[in-house]
Amino acid sequence: MATEVGNKLNGTVTGITRFGAFVKLPDGKTGLVHISEVDDRYVEDIKDVLKVGEAVTVKVINIADDGKIGLSIRKAKEGDRPRGGGKRPPRRGPSFEDKLNRFLKDSEENLATIRRQTESKRGGRGARRG
Image 1 (cartoon, one colour):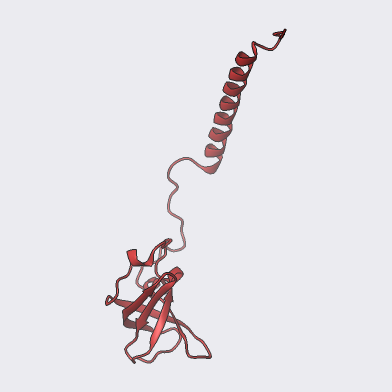
Image 2 (cartoon, rainbow, N blue to C red):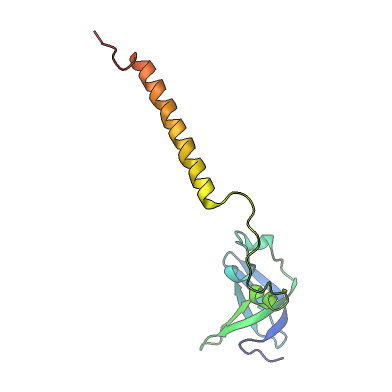
């Protein structure tokens, strides 16, 4: 298959840098998979996900005027996953509002504790110094 935007191709990882991985394509050309295009989740170190010599399926996402080829492993996987019909998964755990209310309650308790500790060090509200 030709190296054209939108095509999915099988390739081999030939090099890894801190910003991405170089992949050799079937036609002998090499393209770059940017670190943001490796996986759906955040990738801090690409070496944790890819290894030199590993076979990967990539999607050609762009070809620059100077011939540089932009690839994506993440987008190559999109067609393989079953679609959920756009529905969100059911919520688990407390809602944002519940978390916010809990935070406010904890903050008020912490402030009250700090006020009590400060007042006891000064000898109370009405204590005189002298």
